[in-house]
Length: 205
Image 1 (cartoon, rainbow, N blue to C red):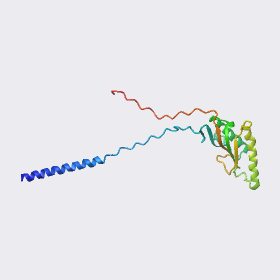
Image 2: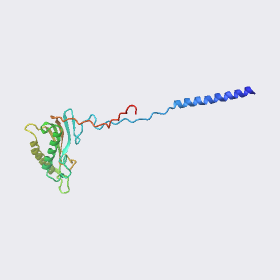
Image 3: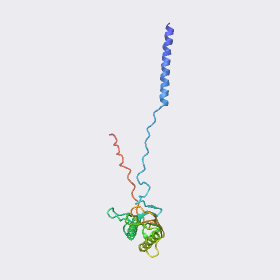
Image 4: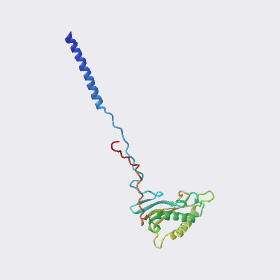
């Protein structure tokens, strides 16, 4: 009887030990995953030169996007499609000249130019058709060339194409797109700060 009781006692001890051993092994295999730390985003503008109005400088060339008669002007100084075409051309070229100078270039350093012109879309101005439409575009082209030539030194005007289109954004009747050589590089913009430095811990505190 005593031997039987001892056997039952040691059997229970062995069973309990097996349960704990299996449980510890199971929990060891299911170690909690370490929390995912999101990668810090790159600093704004890091490694890239700031863009001005969609323009860009790359390898010493200034690429300027569409510059029209209302680009670079305040809202209170806004021209409409009903204003004279010559005014649109002058304002657009003045805006382009300022943009070039900010980038360290100038009108005589333009390498290539694309010019887009369009007729005014307004309820008060009838849209010509047929030959009348062709004549209207031709008149714009001739007016453009007279003003355009005054913005360049003799023999310095760039290669250029001119296209008549249906519509130009921003209430403009003309738009200039192209590239220019940077002759006076501007200093690079300072890198954006990455945040305040972590305070140093004092020893023994």
